[in-house]
Image (tube, rainbow, N blue to C red):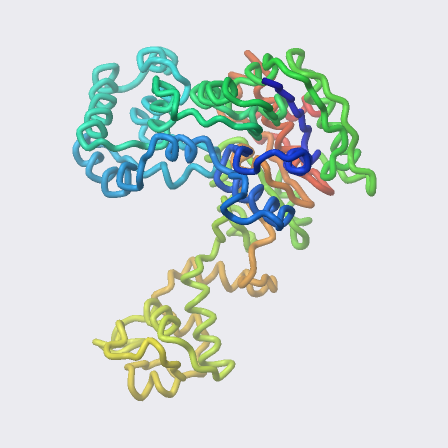
Length: 512
């Protein structure tokens, strides 16, 4: 077994390096079907696969190396089918049985590579499993919990019994089952085993990785202990730091400019227990670094350009989103635009009908009618367009004469779509006055630092407000928060705006 550890500081191109290693392996005659590339999230795995398909066009699909998450590998090796996996209806049924609200976290795992329930009791159950500790240990770490141990044990047993009685798995179950299986046949044998973003792996994922590593000939582990920010879920940078193998440091960033590189490395170098890394910034421009005492000062700069705005916690993020709305900024939060696609469809369809004098599809007519009042915008009985041909196109005149439309074509969209909430109407009008193009992806993206990991933008606004638990953690063990903000700072490609906390200036001043 030959293990190489690739340490990649922000923007140094870990994926490109790994693809080059695959290219070398193929040139040396390695069977591509015996190469496995595993990423932390489905999105990352798919992106790597897309780049590989473009790079290795000579390979047929059946002969292609495979790009997966650890969850999907466990699913495949255990011989599971879609019918074996917990679905929406199962979570709804289980919620009713237990008297708590559960959601299908299997569908929401691409933010972090794992997902926890919102309900506090179910979240504790999930945390114990992904950290590979007992429920009792997790409970003791939480401290006071209304309802106590008995309620927690009741919910944990209820979840376990439900899945067991129906022979169902969630994604965490798959990895646990893989790890606990004594069947050696389920562990694949790779000539080349690649694991990316290793610093984010949880204890149960490390257990699975090491089980696969024991059978692999050549191993590439890529990551960066400085960017390990999921310690609250059990990820520990020491797992990567303590891994034995030949280390190789990628020493040139293609994202981070000198000024931002300087402050970021100054922050991360305060950590003693880390793998030292010397890496160079990109050299075209020095970049911009700005310090602000309040975030309102940054808003004046946000009329143009691509922005990534990050907070430490969801509560502050929600406050920020509300401020963005009040100031008339078009934004997305976790990739979801601030104006829904449904509303935009109705607005655009009405504009096509009236201003552009175009015929529109039945789907667009339905979008319009959805936001019209019965007997005010559209006659009773016509809201669902009965007997309409889904393949036909409809003009404003068609809809008036045959399909119950009552609004004349001189009315503009917010007069016609009278069921659209007034608050939304005011917000959309403000966006249009700012000449925002609502038909493209918003240029401003809001996210927590954890949710933005792997992302980047020309301009980054980073709020240094710490939630209570993080604030306590910072003073007891500042290294965890240093890693989090290091990740946030190094998302910036051109300009970084650091905004002082409105409640406490201590952490903000740590950047100076």
